[in-house]
Length: 118
Image (cartoon, rainbow, N blue to C red; front, side):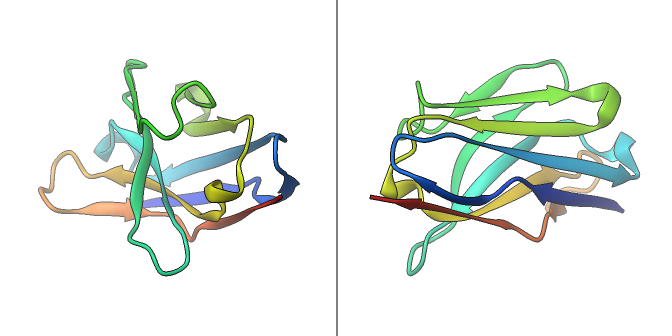
């Protein structure tokens, strides 16, 4: 089992910045890719960005140029630096990590609220 704990959400004005953190613990060897998803009220959960243990990243078109995902493998922590925030970025942000040895098994954090005011 892997536990994921997010921190860093909050309320910010449009144009501002926030940094989210997600610390992994437990059976760390079971995960490689870590990522962030978000879910706005009334909408489906969507992928924001992912990063492998080797540092390869992917991100949604909606956040490219504004959000940066990074990772500290020594601390088993993934970060999401969010700049130039927009009201449409308001959502609950979830940390995610698929289990690389168990197809279909994914680990999720409890979520952290990000609210961007206009």
